[in-house]
Length: 135
Image (tube, rainbow, N blue to C red; front, side, top):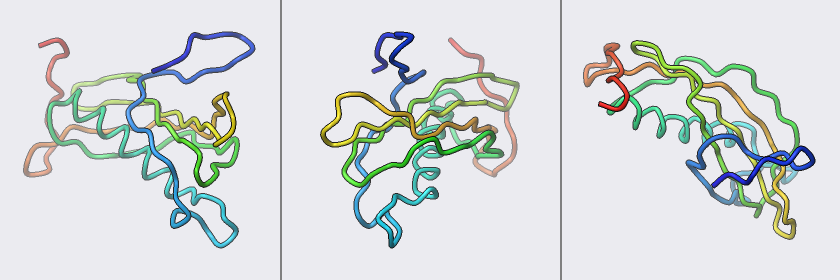
């Protein structure tokens, strides 16, 4: 659930698709959560949304514009918020924002965001059309 927008308090855009807590096994030797682990969760969240939109299989074809803004700590709540940005005949562009709430904090803090592009595929892995929305 997104919080109301306030100029002084940035908040996530889109729908909360995945929320989880990183564990010590998700960190490197310095105790920082692996960037790859975060990207995996983002791809999973966006693929979940793409699957609902395409009503079937889809494949990730691109990840664009990714920058880490702040660290993700073990034990903090992490949420992936997804928003459909564009839809083509067979493709979907989904913006994914990762926000975290540290264990003793009340405010959310943005970790990263990326634009992930998917293409709808059939059972044989061939590109197919995305069904008309609302149908």
